[in-house]
Amino acid sequence: MTQSPVADNKAVRISIIDNGLGMDEATLSQIFNPFFTTKPVGSGTGLGLSISYQIIVEQHCGKLNCVSSLGQGARFVIEIPI
Image 1 (cartoon, one colour):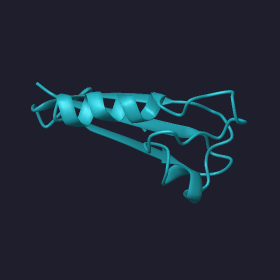
Image 2 (spheres, helix red, strand yellow):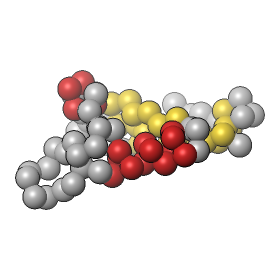
Image 3 (cartoon, helix red, strand yellow):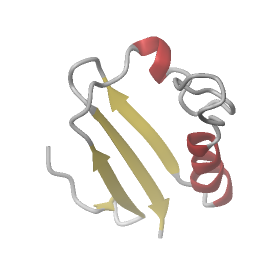
C-alpha cells in the first residue's frame, strides 16, 4: 500500500515495513510498554520502543502505530505534525 508522505497537509508520515515473522496480538498489545521484551533475560532492556513512543507522541504530539500479524511482517507508521 502506497501512502503520501504528507497526511492531510498537517503531518509528515513515515512508514517502516519489514518482512519478518510478524507479531501475535498479545505481543503487539505490549510493544510500547517500558521494559517489555521478547528477548531472553539479560539480552535486552525493552526500552527502545517505549522511548520512541515518548519522543514521537509525548514530545512532538505525533502518532506511532504498529500493524502486524503472524506471518505477515510488521509496519510501523510515524506521523509528526508540521
